[in-house]
Length: 308
Image 1: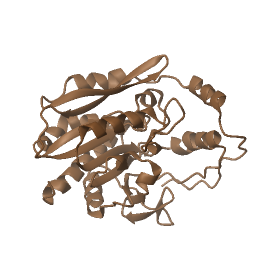
Image 2: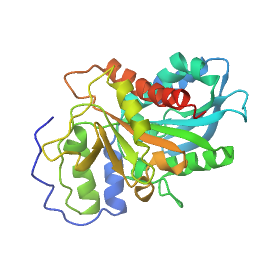
Image 3: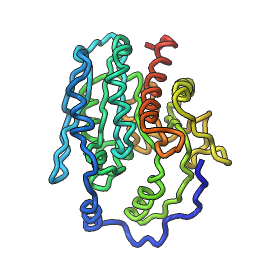
């Protein structure tokens, strides 16, 4: 685990207004292709899936169509699961892990579940490698009504129209070194509020919903992932990113109150994964495998415990 940084971001003037937000937006650059990395892969899916466009983001001069993958034939007798990736666009393995699960592992689960996947909720963030959207809003703090983030609003509207009762929702994320070096300092500047820096945990961990924690479900996911990569230890205070652990590799947040993606679907079982891609112990491919293992571990738990 990296040594805890004790400094904070200081010398804060005032909250960003429209001019500061516009200046920030102008500094952002396209660094990779949503079309190449994501949408092109959606053209060759297993035959039991269809791709559905549920909206479009317009951040001039670019437009980004938003897609979900869902069953070609919806079976009301099956349990329904939701998998979301790229809510924070810069968290690469979440996007690629969702796609990998669809391509390689979904067949064995499609017999038991209606599988709905939104592989890249924030494509502008994916291309510019950003946590925020182009309006300097964090989509993963915006899953409430009315939402300040187009990304969250469009996905919530789509899911509501599905009119499905989700048994599980797994939201795929990463915790990176840039959380401390870039994103928390930017947050401090935007809000003119000191943001303490935290120790970045070296390893995989989960964030459960403290109002719906489902510890056995979380434990099953950790057990699945630890076959692929290492689990983050608690720090000397028994915490991960400032929160007390509820069990090995698991912390809990007030997910609904914070507007987190994992809670908006009201799934009976929900979690947010956190992969650490900057660890010297892992490769990019292993990070993708960890995300897939989290999904399969959660679904196997539901099956093995006769919950579906």
